[in-house]
Image (cartoon, rainbow, N blue to C red):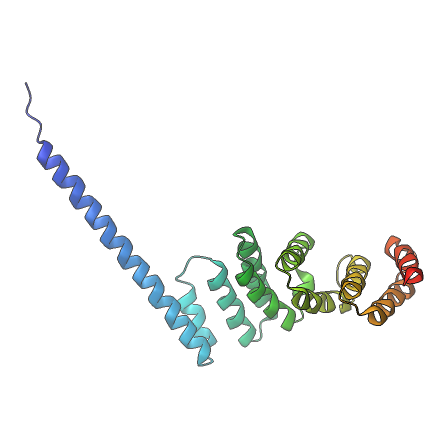
Length: 200
């Protein structure tokens, strides 16, 4: 019968496992170091350095948020929007509302939130409602509905007015409903706004 070196096989397996664990820990340490360097660079206003560090990291909501912040610091609104939109989508997919709001708030500051995909915006606002974060949802809706190039703007104006009504700000809600009727008289939302204004 052939002799099998069981102990040699087990020793090889254990050595391989140990090396894999050490390599993984080393890689995690390198990622953590790169993230810390990127954060420091951003705090010091060195956006280019931050982007170089961030390019070594996998695309996760927080690293994408930092990329967006760095591009915003460099004045590149398009790159900032792309990174922040991706951060928002990834965070929502992972049910990470805190990270999603971080990216969405910066998009709102940059007046770019309205350019997110409609489905992402709806999910974001649904999560805000679920988290009972009405003030933040209202800030987002103000930015979305006030931009003339917002896709499906009548829908967002109507939602903005309804959110204001829920918060007891009826006068402002009526003003937005009137704006909707004047600017989009032939829309379905304008007809609904007429009804809701009459009920106020």
